[in-house]
Image (cartoon, rainbow, N blue to C red):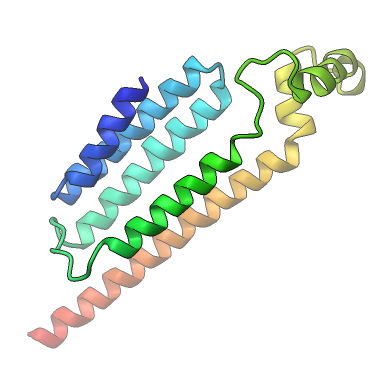
Length: 176
């Protein structure tokens, strides 16, 4: 699964057609969702499938309807962006060095948080499913915040697209 993700990412980077890039990005999101399901993170997989493959792909296709079909050749050197990508990647890898191994039973979340949630959730929340209790109650404000961010991003993109459409109409009137 991870190899397919890497191959899809390389195809996205190499694609010249912006339509192909949009479609490959949607495929990348679906593969990410499948990887999250494999890791038993179904809630994250659902969000990735809905937002990453669904909404993002539709917004990219909507943008393509208002812009050019192919990428213009680069006029600058890719050295600085490549350097920023490598530095960011190195910082992210360094940041994960202190994390416990995946599935480690002695991880702090397993030792301290999980027993507390298992023991107290049925009494504090009165919801029989512990995962639902955590997502809907303990993390309720976090989930609400995520929804607000996605909604705001969607409205912002729609406003940008509508502004682009008006500018294009004005330019067509000036040209004729």
